[in-house]
Amino acid sequence: MMEEQVRLLEGLWGDVRELSLGNRIQRLDSAPTPLQFLRDYVSPNKPCIISNAISHCPALSLWPNLSYLSSSLSDSTVSLHLTPDGRADSLVPLETPKKGETCFASAHVEHVPFPCALDLVLNSERNNVVGYLQQQNDCFREEYSVLASDCDAHIPWATEALGGCLPEAVNLWIGNHSSETSFHKDHYENLYAVVAGDKQFLLLPPTDVHRMYIQEYPAAQYSYSSGCGEFRLELEKPQRYVPWCSVNPYPPPETKENEMSKFPLYFNGPKPFHCTVKAGEILYLPSMWFHHVRQSPDDNGCTIAINYWYDMQFDIKYAYFNFLQSIHHGSTLMNYDATKFTLSDELCIDANELEAEEANQEDTKDE
Image (tube, rainbow, N blue to C red; front, side):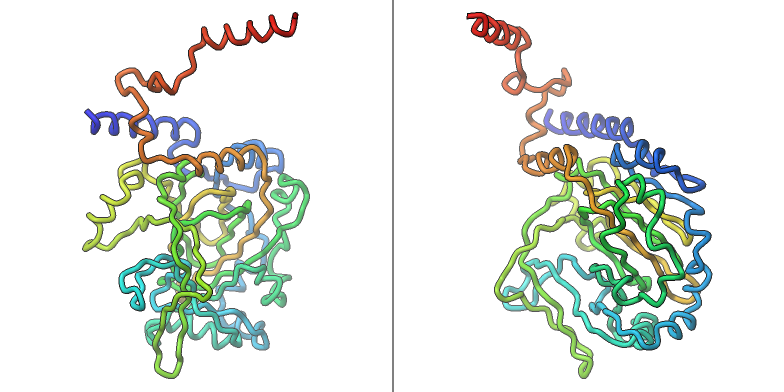
């Protein structure tokens, strides 16, 4: 009976999501008006992909030419993130001192001349280290400002729809096929423009927070020695903990069965939205949406993207998502009567009792 309840609720769950969000990410052939963007996507917290929104930007033709980037940035020092496998800001088992314990691992970061950094990104397999040019601190305006004339400083229709404020941060991302970003969410309205290659996103709405199995993990940091070409992963001191999504949507075959049994709400529930964002397209990724990212390079071996982070509104949607996150979901499914599609009696409010209570309150006022 319990399994039947779960299957029934999973079906309802999927139906409700399809009614509110559809069954795929909507694509627009051109940039929306500010009113359309606000009404149809920002207000309902709904992602979309916009084609032909950056076709006027010189970056689309200039940046895939890596010699142009190397020449333009020959005197620039940039942040290069290094990991052994391309998975920074992700969950990794520790080797020591607590072997097997899962930690939240951050990349080793070096500040190097751009041409050297790009060479390492392009030749990661040769060096047994994966390089990713990125820094989530407004790095485009801080480290790549010489490229400012190649693209828009902001997305005009998005800026107007989001209240007229300019982006809080603009970030540049240059990586190869090995770079991967684990499931997480951001407190920003994100306009993510791909310039070269393509990005594959898995998306889940904020209301699916319970499917992410968010837990606190000890923070750790990679350190890399170029001399011996080896990484070390060590816990941070003083120790701190990072709340992070536990789900890996692409577990290796040897652990897949175990992962599916540990995280049934993810693997047995409605499938995440999957979309590919190609060069010249913008993904609107609403605030608080969970996203996992993989990428495929162009013929030159790079994937290049620039994203614009706008401040989110800490409104009723934010309060609602925080409320959902605060709920313990361990026994939620058992609070339903699957034969009647209603909440169990102890969780319902009797309408007659409510009316009687309101009548008593009115009588008290009259007195």
